[in-house]
Image (tube, rainbow, N blue to C red; front, side, top):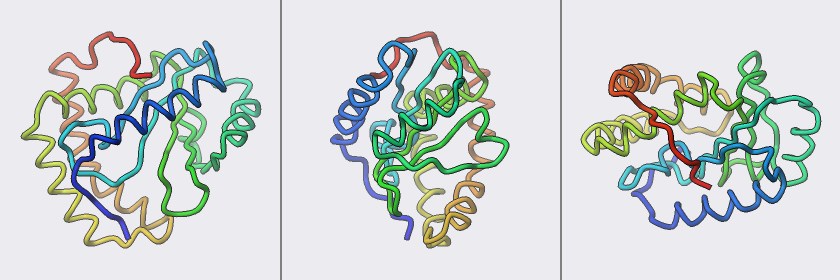
Length: 181
């Protein structure tokens, strides 16, 4: 079942702890470590999963990055062609996971879009509230027991995310900033 719960201030602390683990593994090769996803937006109801985006100068050598994530207890979930630009990992390896990590190239479109969407929701609580309502409705329609159903839940949010992202980019987000961790 996809469980949407009220915002928990402890999510910030959980991110900080995970960012320390990631920084310990990758050192300065990780140019940014950011809390992304719904748990990164104060006040936003969310699945209780800490989403982390780690930005590198390059995703090569890829095998080394995959091995380092495995050493941290993460399972690589190959999402096809998109995996080449935004590799995705879950911890623990079994559902439900508590942490998701996405790797990307610093300055890339995927990095910018995730930060812009997050920042827009942080600045617009009314839009974040609309997003929470949508997620709750979609969670009721999807059990999330399979990767396919989890993907259907995510894809059903696409129209909202696309519209909000376009507004975020018009708004000038993301602004240059330090990473979260």
